[in-house]
Length: 275
Image 1 (cartoon, rainbow, N blue to C red):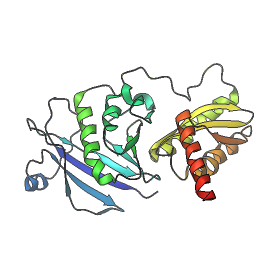
Image 2 (cartoon, one colour; image 1 turned 90 degrees about the horizontal axis):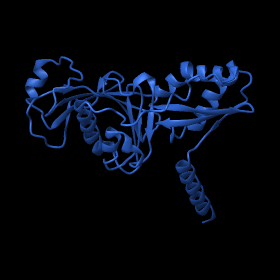
Image 3 (tube, rainbow, N blue to C red; image 1 turned 30 degrees about the vertical axis):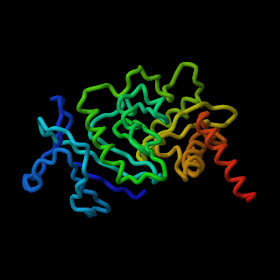
Image 4 (cartoon, helix red, strand yellow; image 1 turned 60 degrees about the vertical axis):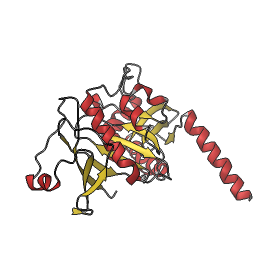
């Protein structure tokens, strides 16, 4: 996976003294720019080279009471319509994750709710230390990024909880009812597979094991990625079958909303084929 890291320097107004992260920046750089306030300075690097040399983007205007600095890294994912934002602070506690596929489902998260108000946003995923935002195919990232950065910074400055409702236990938490095989599956998912998937801005959710079939749901950037089936078959399935002989295959589970979208897409493909 090619990666691009974005160094984001934001100097803008805040109403709270809540301190998130501060890293020293050469005085010459900031002095030459002056107070950015409603601007962001992006230093994008690819293969170790600066590719835009400090491009300025206009953010929403705010009256400045106090300057502050925050760094956000942005990484590309295998899905060109998903970007991974790393604010440099924990996002979800205890390694948990949360995914929102609509504005209605985002009602339990102040940050996700705000992100869905940005034109083009189609999905929000929270990882342990990152936020993956997925968009539609028509809206370019350069129009969305400033608002995404601004909302992430506003949220972490506010001191609000990432979720307003208690989260359900991890899907891979081992229980007394789990068989030895299921325990091994969950252990392997947690220790070997999940970290690799999260590196790509996504996650997996364990949905069950029956007659040799492990049922998993892909989330975040991996959910709608073109290579999701390859990820399941060549990556996850091969590893599980290698370490756990009882596993014969891996099956992807779709939620009702995703199933409806897939059926409609298949109908459209059939119509185009007939035409």
